[in-house]
Image (cartoon, rainbow, N blue to C red; front, side, top):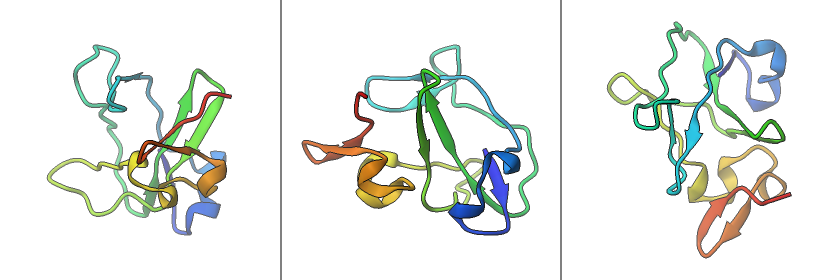
Length: 105
């Protein structure tokens, strides 16, 4: 998680406020290391929050939009619904049968 008062270009590694390990399920959902629970971050957010996904330590996806609004007590972000969901657009992920996903490098 990265927090900044700026836009996505300001969401640099220096703005990281928390990180957690998780699993990517077949449907693309990311869950905690128990394989079921959502990933929870115990942080207080006061500015724009962006999510970053490191997959196997190599692939990096950065959300293009900040995570707003909060729904209930959680943020959700769907990287698969369009090219405009990842910073870098088509360079960040690829359309596969109508769903956007992470290409194998």
